Length: 332
Image 1 (cartoon, rainbow, N blue to C red):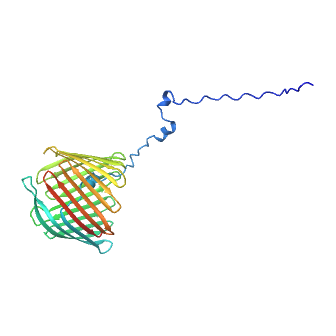
Image 2 (spheres, one colour; image 1 turned 45 degrees about the horizontal axis):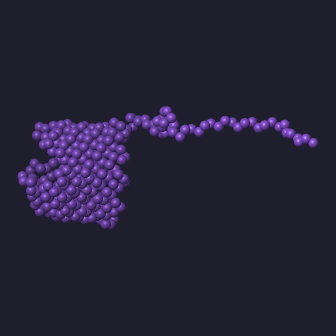
């Protein structure tokens, strides 16, 4: 008996397998990004008809000033604020320390001083009235009145017993959709105006002009501000010969670093400073050091609800001037 042989058809051969891609792409594939990344990285179109409103011209360096210009003082200070209702409050302030007297020598001359200050505040969504009177006869007053949603009137006045030292200023601020303008009128025949315009979502440019009639002086200035969520840079130049630059870097939600540079062409003075602003849970620490050898620090410690302890220190190594102050603030 012979063996039986199967005459079934053989299975088809497997389909050809594509060769694996090379480990390192060749040609343009090595330098061109993937198509998906190209779509994600495409720049968004800027709607120049809906630009944000810039900051006021006079506050163009507000972030830098917050870190580099704390309210330093020398001596002891006590501030108390008592709210009578939701809109009206009274304040009391006592200060004992020393003030610097102008001197032609390099040595700093200090005179002991002390004064009491009484204040009254009225705060309303449309109007703000602030008044301060000191025991030496000085009176300070501020008014902010929103005439419309876009037009605001500001009045600042300082009255003294000394002749020719009283000052007054009227400001009319107009807030547009993507610009701000201001007109100023003051004593001594002072007239001024400024305008700032958003050019891009981050860049704003502005200009200002003033005329001081009693001294027959005028000036013209230009400014620019570039603002991003992480840093702010500003530049200002004026016909008076002053050039000012500032840069603020937001390291984190609690830490901010700032620096500024100022050059005066008339006096050939150059100053630069570097500062920091550190916000903790219960305190805020600010400090700076400048090119003249002056080091300063300002600490605000929250002891309890409505109670803050303040420390202020400043050392000028060149003039050998040392200042230290402490204070207590009660009330909000």
